[in-house]
Image (cartoon, rainbow, N blue to C red; front, side, top):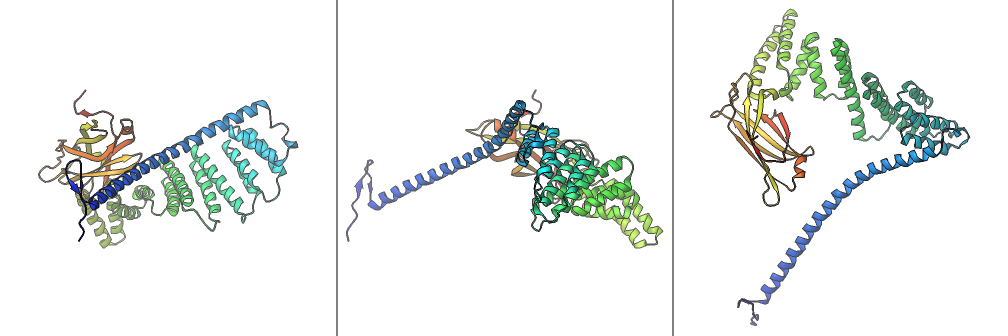
Length: 446
């Protein structure tokens, strides 16, 4: 058997060829992995910078386009002799004026373009409607859209959908919410003619309809027209049957006019957002419903409503935390530099300002960056040994440390901490959200 020759090392140690080869492979592997990690980091950083630059370039390009358009317009009055110009020239002139927000002259250019356009081309109609909407000439814009009635042309359907969305947005921006809702519904009518739909666009249109009808309902309630408010909220509910805000508004308004219907809405909300319900209104609706059931000779239903009042009280006491029941006191915030990063540590206390003691209470402390949740730390706030009493005494200090390392002091400004409190993990209440400060401090420091 041939023995491997050993080599003498600098430290008088002997290594076999296989050991030397393994060391060499290990060194190369570590170097390659380090290079890959470093290259990946640089690539991600470069990509993020590229995305930022793209958005910055778009804004810069828009400003540049507007500046150039202004300079061109100052050299000549293009709107004068458009009757003699071709269709393409009229369109270019209209877009030029539209770039500098001169909608009146853009309107003149697009009107001339329509006089010269070939049959089946609808872009100048859309552009004219758009600049009329920008000037709040809604009836004129409607007349332009009514001129073109080919509901099978995909391009026309697209233009009409866009135009009615723009009209709705303009109505909404000036506080004419009902007119906005009607325009959004027209946009939805045309958008539904497409065989293939984009879920994001479909959702966006429906959200606009619901938002406009909800705003209209709020105005009706302030004016004392509750029946009209219910009618508009019912329309909103048709477009988004699972919208809990719409259901809650209906529950509140119907608590007087139709308490049993109000109760049915409240029961659904009790299972999903109990921390946002006004239990005073809910219990009044239950009492009224019990009285109505008695008068209608429905004793079993009346008994159910009365029992529900008691069970709701127990449910609230055991499961629900209201935002206004708890005050947050920040004892300490630490963002001192440690090596090359700024670890975030916070110490909080909580004061119970409600009318009842809280025995079990937990908190989720969520570190967020530009609205995105990065890390959650869960802590116990109160228990049987240390209850949160209702006389305003503060809880034991709750220390929260996040693992996320923040690399620059400027970057700290982009982080916030959300605090959710709950008795039951299913029903968390957002008590507060605060930015991460740039400096460390302790309570009582000046």
